[in-house]
Image (cartoon, rainbow, N blue to C red; front, side, top):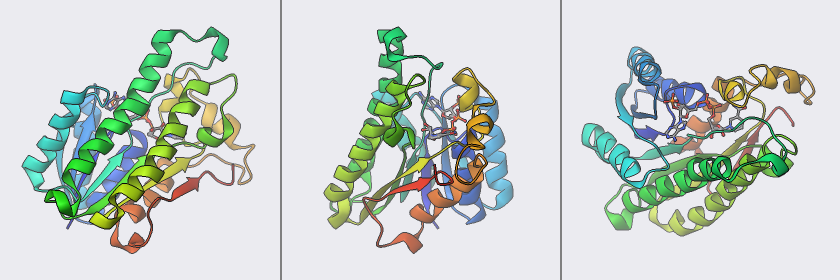
Length: 247
Ligand code: NAP
């Protein structure tokens, strides 16, 4: 029985990961920032699947919100044994020359500062020398970290490069204290994130050009997340796993 917090657990990849945790009978803290109805729907799916769920509203870019979402999940289910640092955003496709500083600050605020704040909270709570039971941290990077996303999202791509580096460093910091830290780099996955980037059909348009000839589903990424959370991945740490259909 594991106790898991998923940031951005209300929709997309985070929702599917929450449901798979529920199928294993695990307890899940579902963080969301604004879409409470979606978070409630996810919680209902988790309970129907056989798990427990609690909602934890908060912006991962705000330190006090991050502390509160970890505390709320631990209050409901006891010490965390797994965290999925999944919340992430894009902005409408644009060359770098046309990006405003406000846009870049928000992308780096959510995707980098948010990931670091959540990772720091993991480092304070999960390690055995800090009173934790050990556990598993899974970060959501992106294939963009190695492709660069020219003319679309070089800001987003760079933010995911930072997530890769955080994964490698934190894995080494926490390995001796029973905490594994890994990342997943999804490719083109059919979720709402592409609509927020201005092109709802982007995953399909580009997915057909990948080696596997199709976009991926949120469920296919969630399967990898739950494997990394599980004890079956007991010797895997510091790994960055591409789930991108060969892209
Ligand atoms: P999505 O469908 O757009 O869902 C985003 C989730 O993050 C929602 O639950 C949203 O909450 C939450 N969120 C957004 N901003 C937040 C904030 N500031 N604080 C807390 N929660 C916040 O995204 P997705 O496609 O599932 O992506 C999940 C992760 O995978 C992201 O890190 C993304 O960069 C990465 N990824 C996705 C793809 C892809 O093709 N889909 C590819 C590579 C990497 P609300 O419901 O409240 O808005």
